[in-house]
Length: 505
Image 1 (cartoon, one colour):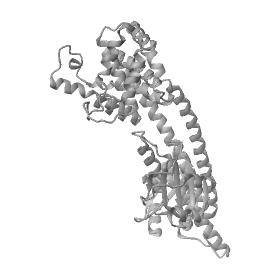
Image 2 (cartoon, helix red, strand yellow; image 1 turned 60 degrees about the vertical axis):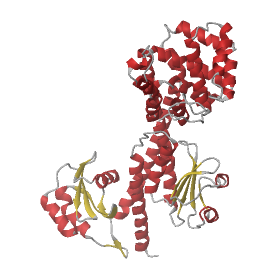
Image 3 (cartoon, one colour; image 1 turned 180 degrees about the vertical axis):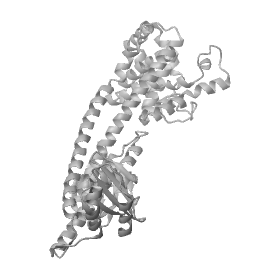
Image 4 (cartoon, helix red, strand yellow; image 1 turned 30 degrees about the vertical axis):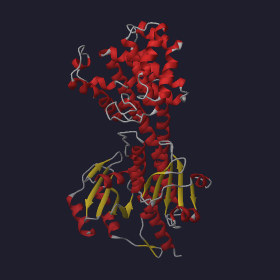
């Protein structure tokens, strides 16, 4: 191969690499704003940027291999994750490609276990794709995964901060509802333990119980505190508290299980409840419903000690056929235990002196952990950014070394751009000049910082001041622009601009 062909091919490769890095930088530097931390929102936040990189196939798959989201939608419902894991995170296998996609051409694979959704991402790329690009896409996936996880934690941290404010408002302005929620939480936790509920699920149940009536903050106060019998219209207004609570917690990004408990804790399995009249209750929702009833019944009666437990059990049994039987049985067991009466006595004694901080600590103890995780992820993202910056600089150096000359049969040949550069470089103090076509460097003479070139192309402004100087953008036609870089912050003269336009158009 002739030297000029070799240099030309290498120059084209470096141009492609630089263009990829410019595109990837734009993707990675864009903030990820999770309006909701639902699985579907998290998956879309990961897939959308990858689609822009012209990846051939992307699938988000759960541990069992079931496809949760795919691009393009090609009717693929499952992928054998166990078999893929044997090959590593990056591999090339026409055999696997044929087996999964019936297409040997999609033989470059990237497989990664995601932190942000506890699922796997399987990316398939055309076999003709160069290895450096496959590795770049792998790096992009890793960074996006970290960024989405950080966005999740930030979202949760912000949500919990706002939630603390909501509960404090509830505590300050409606202590009766606050204390009711406090007792319901205690009862719900004990019911969950009797039912041998896993510890991580008990935490969700405790949070659901504390928040089940948060929607009452948005009801008319005179209706909420009315002592007389409610009218039909007023009762309908009271029933809205479950919908209001669901709306505010959904906006804050809470788990579906917690949202369901807040919305449906007044439902009954015979369909007589509200707001939907559903007959199916999750375990969490059924526990919250029973804990709510327990507190309402015992608070409305004078059951001050264990001698009244038979009457209380009789009232609870009235809900047979309306709540699951195992929940009814668990409630009876709780009522006959010492724990139930201890909760009742302690809450009664402390009602006047209880402070928000005492009840807030155990609900929001996760905040400290969230902050620590937040810091760790920020550090990792800084490391990734440094890697990208170092890669940019290395390619920038190589690019400028090759782009400074137009080579033909081993001899230098001056182009129009070279002529312009030599003519105006001293008078205008020009450091570098380039022609950009459709976002790619067509020709470059001298030196222009890559980050400055990125900005002027992406922002589309006429001029841009940087730390190193001034960069100009001159439009030649619909697809071409000319970019100049000056170290001195002095505007380009009209005569030089006219010269550039006349020679390059």
